[in-house]
Image 1 (cartoon, rainbow, N blue to C red):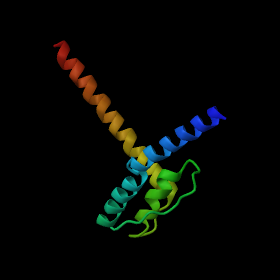
Image 2: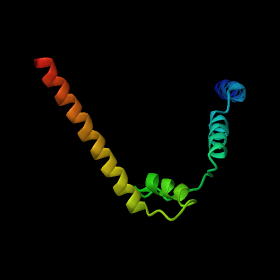
Image 3: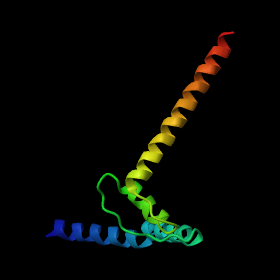
Image 4: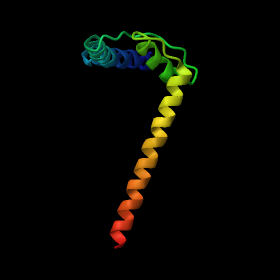
Length: 100
């Protein structure tokens, strides 16, 4: 019986401590809503199917005209490949210069 009372006291202490903690989810939601409002966007649920990042972008971009997820994914891939190639060229050039 004493052990049960101690456990209940610990539960109460934890509950009281939780009441004093900031609500981080509410803070994050408020910050996100501020940004969404600033840019004229709105939060929408997307299916978590592996393309969800691109689907979320497409939903926002569709406000200015239709955007296909596959087109957006392909464009992103081309852009990333271009940036990787540019970085590689820069590294090779820097290494060549350091050898001179």
